[in-house]
Length: 227
Image 1 (cartoon, rainbow, N blue to C red):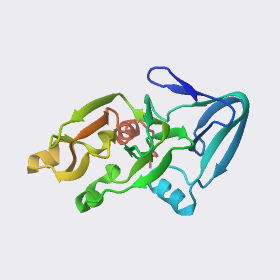
Image 2: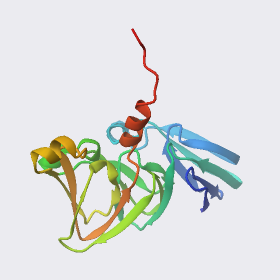
Image 3: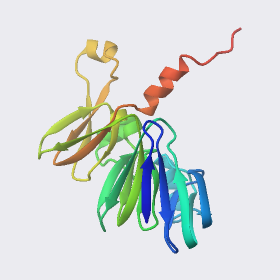
């Protein structure tokens, strides 16, 4: 499978498929395509797996695009301004992603819901609680709003993050939720009551534009009904 990522703030990924190669995405995720491509929409992995994906921010149904002959082209685009990140996962290698981050992947990649084991993260994690787990082998494409910053945390090294800014991280990184200290900080800092704590070892990728922040900003300019 060959692919090219084009653009700057509204990127697109062109995926070229040879006969027998396939790529899958959530229902409605494809932008355009050409060639002898077969589409098949199904509850990939069964009903329980599809319900889990729904909780993790994806649709119940997934569509697989398979090239039957020649060279096929399938193009995918993100839902918001940002970056498309391509990762090649080895067999058994996983990555933990923010919900809605999944764009598309080779047919050999497994997508499933990922819950935090710690009670604090489960009760208070908000948009950072239900995540996605992608396991190789294969190439996966993630859509990340805004820009992406990558950090490598040493064993025991901690990064405190607004949960909405977490894009994805390696499974070796532990995740927990901590409370913001100080009444003034809680009431007037604008950071909310909770922060995520990411502890190494492992790599983390942070996004500069959480969709919730973008939605709140746009909402201020939306017309409202009067009277």
